[in-house]
Structures are given as structure tokens and as C-alpha cells.
Image (cartoon, rainbow, N blue to C red; front, side, top):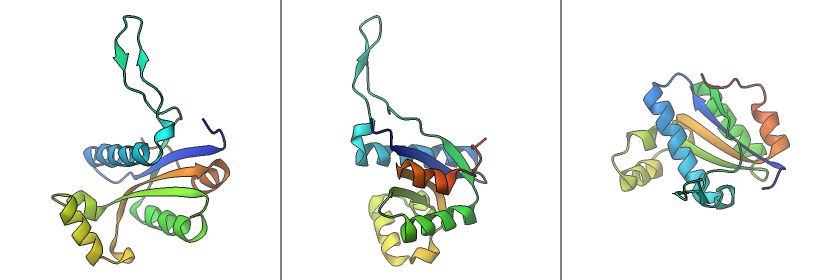
Length: 139
């Protein structure tokens, strides 16, 4: 694995626990699809039972507010788009009944209309640390 890369998730700590878990799961699925190299190989336990690969890097889950997430999103898009891959999960996605509904609602929304439930940052360790180093762990 590339040691110069880092991944963190930042979730709105004001959400109910179920939505926190859902946001992290959705961000993780997209991360695994986009950055497939972070998922390890299938391994066997001592009994010979096979287990699917899991991520080979730590993924800290950090805490922020609704406004903090929006600010972080815009900062990354405006200043760090080359250094960081940004995955977002927003309120429109959370309220959509299916993917087509989500796509239609997103097409009608402006960037200012979106409220972020969570973000996943994957990229240059120095940039990720700079942006998230002061954020607390989600509790």
C-alpha cells in the first residue's frame, strides 16, 4: 500500500446513530469501488474458511457539524481537488427512494442547496492531515 496516502471519513455528529452508520457504510462502498487497490486479498482462517478482503488502511471516523462539513467540502473542491479524492453523501441522497430519483433531484439542486451528512477524503497524507487534523474522533 502507498504510505503517502491517507483516508478519513468525516460524519455529522448531530445525526441519529442509524444515519451515522448509514453514511459511513455508503461512503465506504464508494471508496472501495473507486479505490479498489485498498481492499486486500481473500484470506483463509486456520480452519480453511475463506474471508473476503478488507481495507488495508486505517479509516478514522471523525466528527464535524453540518456547517463544518459544507465548509470542508468547498475547501477541498476549491483548493485540494488535485491532492484529494472527495466522496460525499448528502441529504438528497439520504431522502431519495432510488438512484434515478437521486439523480433527478441532484440535477435540479444547486451546490448551495446540499447539506452533507458525511465526507470521505482519500489522498495525499499531508493534505488530509492539514484539513482534518483538528477534528475529533466520532463518539
